[in-house]
Image (cartoon, rainbow, N blue to C red; front, side):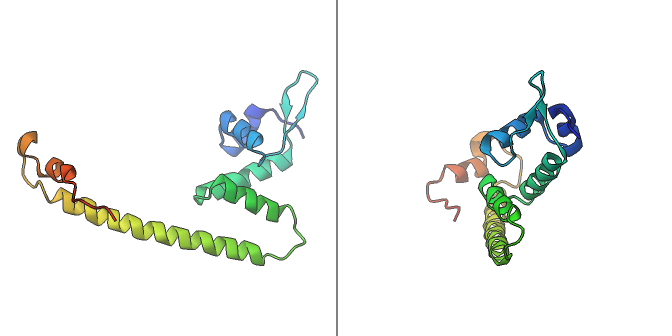
Length: 137
């Protein structure tokens, strides 16, 4: 089965530009070409692109995806490194969650600076944002 890039995009819910980008970055192998020089993709491209998209939906970087694809492309090796890799990603997500919780608290504190409608010149939020002692750690 050979399909053109537009059909690949439809089947994987991925834009043509993204497909070309993944090819350029080397995470999606270059397709064969037709006599008319059209890109021709096969079932392997569909499967690989779905894998890439799933990883990206899990907030993995393209570098992370590339690493996982290397593991995936060597199916007879042990998966211990994949487990370690995912544990590290889980830890990074946990750290981001904690940082986002701190950000939310900071924003809520900032929001409390202006509880009533006043002129912009008197806005406590804008005044607090201008204060150099404001930290977002």
